[in-house]
Length: 277
Image (cartoon, rainbow, N blue to C red; front, side, top):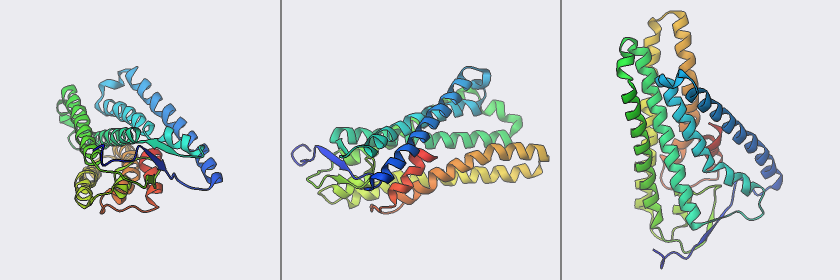
């Protein structure tokens, strides 16, 4: 691998070449990142410091907030630093580390969202069996499965990329290291690897999205028979989930479900599932 890899540093082209736009983006993302830290930290402290941690919904929300902090921290600090830098560079090893950690925590977050949807489905559609089905042992098993799934997904993406030869050029048309921009720079035939990425990231995103939408469809069908107050409570809980799912999965599907090609719009779409959602 070392003999065929002549690139030790990558140049990130970032979001824009306009310095005024970059300054504006820095201020915007700084406020977003502060809000992410304050919001998620308050959620974690509020849940772990009270009896709410005993309830499955808040148990999952606690881990979702933790994974979200880790996920956004793999991209946002580097992005904000580069927005103020004249030359945006990242070493080969740091690039591979960012690729692995981004897909690790992103995968965990996707699977936790699925676990939360399952929890809401059981709570609304099978309320009498809820405490039995969503026992603490079951919740711990779901979180363990989410972490394992995220690791397997990330490791496969990492292994698909780490052995690629990079001979130059070394300019990544993105603001962080991701699989498709790196495939574009590889000096070898990456068609098969591109298909494997679709089979991995693309199918995971698609299947998870379909499962989530089906769960909420069954929930909405079930609440029709409830009282107006119960329907309002159920819909208020699910509406926030559906909003996050839409903001997260729609851009991710646009990027990962297609063949291994890159577009300038990818950077804008990626902002939705790395920072905004």
